[in-house]
Length: 234
Image 1 (cartoon, rainbow, N blue to C red):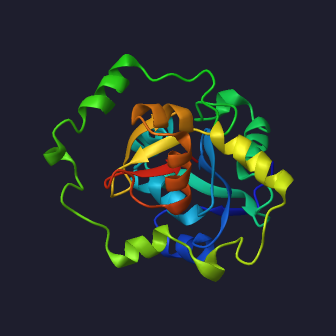
Image 2: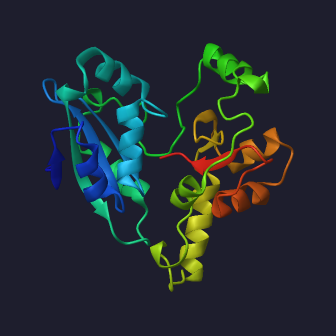
């Protein structure tokens, strides 16, 4: 699969922000020498790529390779620019993943946003549970987002790709089915992931609330329980 665009200088974050700051799509991070890569997707390519570059909420295999070889040994490629909100971005990501031998990918899963066949180790589960037992250890304890950060999280009005548009009932039903089975991440106020859940029901059961409550907080982007953000995992 031929990339639409390639970036060889990952340190030039200004160029990435200029080109990709307002675009969604499917991307790859490729180790130049081996051609091994991680394939992902996001509605904000720049933000997601910065996660990988900064080593936050990233793919473990990818980060190990970056640590071993350095960012200079990697290229960023864009396989698809997302322009039609009616198209499910994860479907395109899965198509791109399937275009390469899975053994050449850092990805853990063959299907985007599917937790099928993937399980956390007992050590990982215990680590996630114990990480913030003492909330004073939490990096965002006692802190709040500034106005600039909040404006980046929320995209109201004409910045929203669906501004002035409506989905058909058929599309709404499809979206509802898809969203109900998509994995979710529970994030702190600094958008660091705390724990992952396979779907809305699992997260709702964790906090003894109805899954529609979870759906409402996903849509609104507001803090859940006053201290968590809930996001669908890219």
